[in-house]
Structure formats: structure tokens, C-alpha cells
Image (cartoon, rainbow, N blue to C red; front, side, top):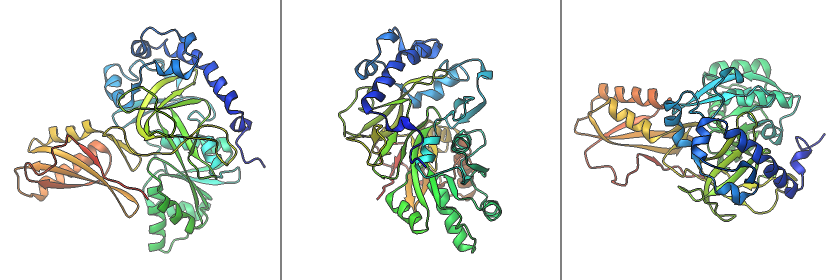
Length: 411
């Protein structure tokens, strides 16, 4: 049995690079047929964009700008097909950002990540990514079935029901955030439930620090992380070498200086910019807001694609919490709904291997449980995440311009 998904993963690196840039002009020409891309990219000769240098001369599209663009020209801001029957499914992510799913076998290009994590035909996958409105559940569902696995469409939460299906179907593999897997394991221990059938995991949507990886390994679960977004699918994935994340086939990754479109030197930390060659829905130089770096050399696992170091933080104040993006404009919306509040600061921390967030709000009001509860409800309504609220005196928050302070550290 091969340890690779297909022979493309072990191609000569120069042959892969030549293939990518031979196909780029057609993808760019297709993008220019959409009014959003045509306006954003301006006058460009698609046939001439055949090198990384030529690609780097094109403007980046910031992911953080998509909510405004989509709102101005629903649903995709002119950056995708306007005929919605072109898609198999339609989704919305926080922002809101709207996405369409292709009709192919593995439309989000995620099967390679599961295969690299050890998923095989005989596996039964407990998929705990959300199936409701956001695309995460279907991304992994398609991928697992492309590998040949049976899938339990569990979604997140409701641990009691999760334990019931684990008992009934004995899943061997898990797909979801690392945080939720830890919750399942901890609650299984507390309630004396048997979840020992799970032996492998593909995790994403949140950081996967070495300490948590080792905690899973101690439980007999080998977990591997993948990195992707709803805009482009799976960007890169971890392999058995545990030496960076291999960049997926059919996409081009650049690392640029944050706030610019200028590529940095190999090994230097910068913002991840992705170009996809999907002929139906190409994406040209989207800046994802995440920090990473290109690793030198090839992976010891035998795959010959470029590697990135992994997720190293955010290039802007947008934070990914429990697999969901939280943006400064969402925090501003909370302030609009509660004019009693002045300066706001969402603090994101890590506690017991879980993401936690606290909204600190300056106000002249004294503590009032009813008011705090109302702000809590607004926080959850706007961000789709639970957190805590602390009312603080005027002038007590740092005057540093931060709306979201990500204080998480990983070891």
C-alpha cells in the first residue's frame, strides 16, 4: 500500500513549479472574466504572468476586505460565478463571507491532508466540523469519502450524543478542531465513557501545539494538523515527518511582508498569500492574514512540495478562536448595540489547551448582572462564540489601538 495519495506528491520540484506556472495564465484569464477580479487586478496580460516575479507584481486581495466586497455586490462581490446553480452547496462564514462549493469529488482539495494523517479505506471518521451554513463539515466529509472512509456527520457540540455514536459505530478516526477532541477525551474520562476506538486525527481550525499533540499521543491517538480556509480549501498539511506543513497540490503559496504584496526571503516570517488554479473559481493572491514562513529543503516524508512552518499568528487583528474568525468590526458592532460601553478590547487566551476569550469594556456603569448578561448575549450573537465580559473603568485599557489582543502562546 502506497504511503502517498498519488504520484504527484513525489514529482520533481522543478517539474511541479513549471506545471503550476504553465497553468497560471489560464487561471488568471478566467479570473479576469469576473467583474470583481477584473476591477481589482486592473489591466494585466494574463499570458505574461508565468513566473513568481510576475505574479508578485499583481495586487493582493485581503481576506479581511471580503465582507465589505460581498455586501456591496452579493453574494461574491463579483469574484466568482454569478450563476449559483454552478455550485453544489452555498455557505456563509463569519464576516459574513459567502462561499460556493464545487461539484467535484474533493472540491476543497482536502483528501491529501487526511491521507497524510493516516486515514484509509477501512476507517470510520467522526467528523465534528460544523455542517450548518459554514463549509468545514462538508470539506472534511468530501475528503474522507474521497479517501474511501465512511463518515459520521457529527458536527460540533452535544457530547452525550457524540458518545452514543462512538459507542454504536466505533469510529477509528477524528476530524475537527483539536480543542473539541480534547473536550471529548476529558468528558469521556469524567463520565467513564470508552472512546478508545479513535486512533488517528486530522485537526484544523485552531492551533495544535506540541503539548496537545503529545497529550493525544499518550492517549494512543496520532493527530496531524491541516491548514486551510473556506476561500481556497486546504492550503497545507502535516505529514508523518512532523517537519512543517507540505503545501497542497494545485496552489501557489507566497509569504509576503505584512501589509504589502512583496515576497520575503525564504525562512523569513510573513503573511500567507495563496493563488489557486481552480479553472471554475480561481483565486489570485488572496492574503489570508496568517503568519508563516517557507522552510528550506524537502520533507523527510518523501513529498516534494514546498513546506511552510505552520501557523505562527495573525498579521492583522483578526483572530481565529475555536476555528472561527473574530474581526475588529464585530467588536465595534457590540459597542454600537450597547452605547453605555466605550473602548472595547477582546482578549484571547489559552487555558487548559482551550481557546478562551474575554471582552473587556470601559464604561462609567457599575457592575450590573443584567447588563453584563445582555452584553454576553450580544458577544455570542455577533461572534458565534461564547466568552466572558468584564466591565472596567474609563481609561483603564491600554491606548495602543488594539481591538483584539491575542495573548495565546504555544509550546
